[in-house]
Image 1 (cartoon, rainbow, N blue to C red):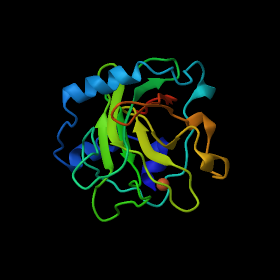
Image 2: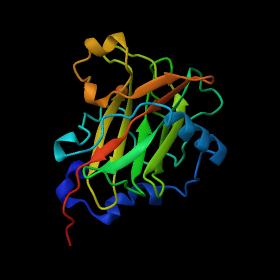
Image 3: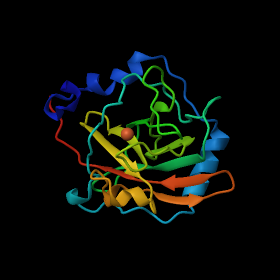
Image 4: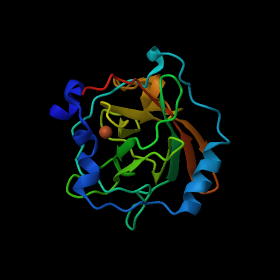
Length: 210
Ligand code: FE
């Protein structure tokens, strides 16, 4: 698929998703600040230091759909399960925050089922000036053959797309899922409202083509 051939990446590719829908900036600022405050109480995830520390890629899987809604909360009527707020930064391998990076999540619901007809539990957003993102959602359920996970695509402006997955610590199925990668474990804590998770994405930069 062309979107997964970094050598041909252009600004137009970066804009594909924002042009597809008018989009509404999602989570209320109060919720966002709460999420960030929660995340800052968590220990840091492995940090950037060298190219080798870039966040590893993973398979896209069969359930990705283009043109997800622009939003920072996937919570809506009918969505059940344990609420989780995932926060973090998008960083370069030299530890600089990346503003305006696309972060596009999709996941199974609490019963382990993807919405392949609509856009439930799918949403993209762009990092703020400090490179932060924040996602309010529910803990995904298990489905046969996989441990608990979130899917995500991350793309800095003018850069290739990183497709990967995020995992939950202390999940028994991590030991039996061939795709599981401990470098993609989120830090997760219980909160009064559910859970708070943190993960920083570290992206390798690629020379821009003119
Ligand atoms: Fe999946």
